[in-house]
Length: 198
Image (cartoon, rainbow, N blue to C red; front, side, top):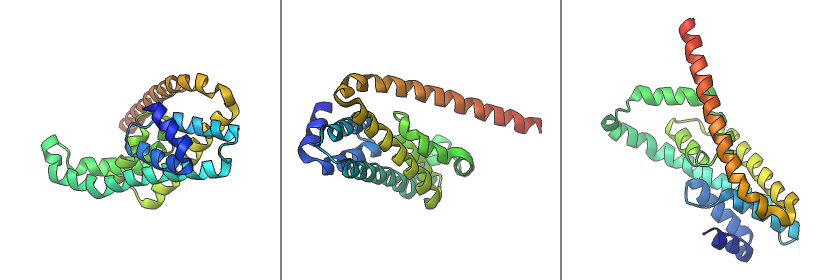
């Protein structure tokens, strides 16, 4: 699958970058980091121009996360209101989720790009919690800019060594995800204990 995707980028250029990243962010099994790193390598080789590659990658990731947000906002709340009682999700749970996103959850839209499996869910969860569109746009698109810049630059500066290093990226991202989850859990426990002490 990965080789087919890289071949599509080589053959169809910027349009393939937009389409594949959009599908990958929505949740299809597209190796997003590999795609971006390879694109950066093609910029290094002179096949692509950096401004156009950056614009294509940003457009694809921005469209993908926006689609996920709209799906969550359009169908997520309706599904919860209709079927939530069967899985013990009540209106108060939705309100708590909304309050959490207003306090700190929007940062997951920015940082979630760098965590495998998380970026596919954060926008959907933001939509389900009815996070306001301007807040969503600010944090989600900022995350897209940082994520695209990081991996395009990685591929560019690694040059011909991109493939050897890229295989280790996923391991580091998994560790980063675990550290992030542990840190978030610790923070939430600390906040809860602090609220009880008050």
